[in-house]
Structures are given as C-alpha cells and as structure tokens.
Length: 143
Ligand SMILES: [Zn+2]
Image (cartoon, rainbow, N blue to C red; front, side):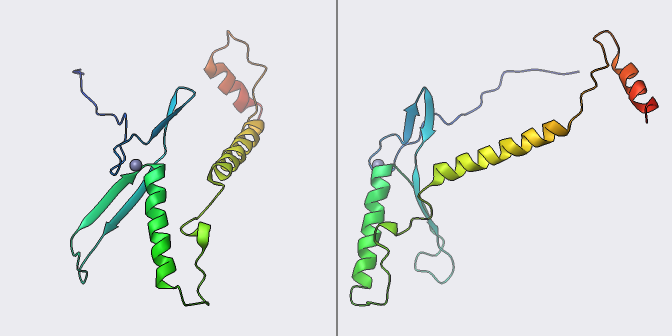
C-alpha cells in the first residue's frame, strides 16, 4: 500500500552577493542564469586560521574588485623581480572561451548520439496491430 502526503521541498530561487547584496541571477529570455563568483578557503592544522572555513558568493562586479585587489597585491610582491610573470589581465584566468567550449562539448555529444541512433535498426515489417511478442519471435526466427 502506498501512502501519499504533500511534502515541502526547498528550491534555490535566488542567490545574493555577500558583498553588495545584489542578486547574482541574470534573466535572459525568461530563463534565470547564475553568474556567480566564489571565494572560499578552509584552513587546517598549522595555520593561524586553523579550523576556520570561509565562503563568499560574489557578483561579477565584486568578484572583479577582489580579483583586482589580489592582482595588485601580486604586483607589489614581485615589483622588483623582473623574472616573474605578473600575468596582467590573465591573472587567475583559466579559460576565456568557457561558453564556446561548453557548446563544442554539446555539439560533440549530439554527434555521438546521432551515430548511436543511426546504428539502431527499426523493424519496418512490424505493423501497428502486431504485438511486441510477435515482432520479438519474428526477429529470433530470422537469426
Ligand atoms: Zn556584489
């Protein structure tokens, strides 16, 4: 016996920047997209911050502010070290074509799905009124 009851489920509907308290959700064509940066750290034994865990959600603007502050700090640290690459605008940048890479992955997966589907043979001899068992029996007898 199955017993049913209504259940409340929490759903994320918005995310707020921990610095400026603006939403990090951007609406494009009635779809909400989360454009959020994150600063996080957890420190362990041997650290002055032992046991402390930090996590900040940042909007694009506040993330850039933090990034620029860290980039400036790096410039100060290595100001007189000519051998050190200060990276400039590329500091912290892992990819500048993230969406293009995601689209390429999706297109590649679409292609492999099409090739899998092209290998699937449809038995066109089965008419609508034949049962599934008939078509299985027919398929076995041909082998
Ligand atoms: Zn912000």
